[in-house]
Length: 241
Image (cartoon, rainbow, N blue to C red; front, side, top):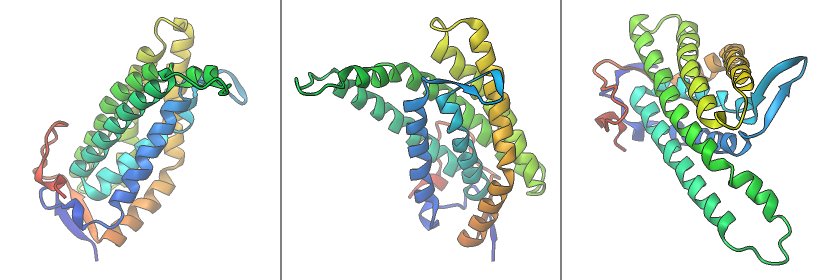
């Protein structure tokens, strides 16, 4: 039996799978930032360029869709902030360990620096874009769920992807590559990255459907964000553990 709850009624401590999903969500985001500085060619589309993060990062938006659709905007907000601070911690630790003097027998300092001394800029870009894009995505999905009264699930997934990924892609490419890469390459990264991420998530819509429907049955809930405070900085009661 699936019960309809409002955002005010949801309590994360009642959910069985939420914490596990947040852990996976955070790990995917951290890995995305570590591989983000590599620029890749799309096989079969030689003019297109994507960063390494774009091969993995769209999965975080699918997780945000699941959080918002199943558990409500408050649960998605909490997951976004956890991931945000996990990224900051990874950056601080990575830079500190790289800076710390290496032993003479350690032969891979240059490789370490190639990853972690570049990471801070990409983490800053990712944090700003992630914060803006994920909250845009979750807000759009939550509002569309109210407008459609819970019907037409695919419209919410596609609609939130279009808005969230537009904000994310534009911000991350400008902050990460401006001044180090030509504007023509940045523009190609934006266009190809945005189109690729939207198509990526659209192609995975059946999987997202399956996950969402099974989670709703497993948790026995379906949260509608009526009366929810959509301020990203709010700590509403539905987030309390």
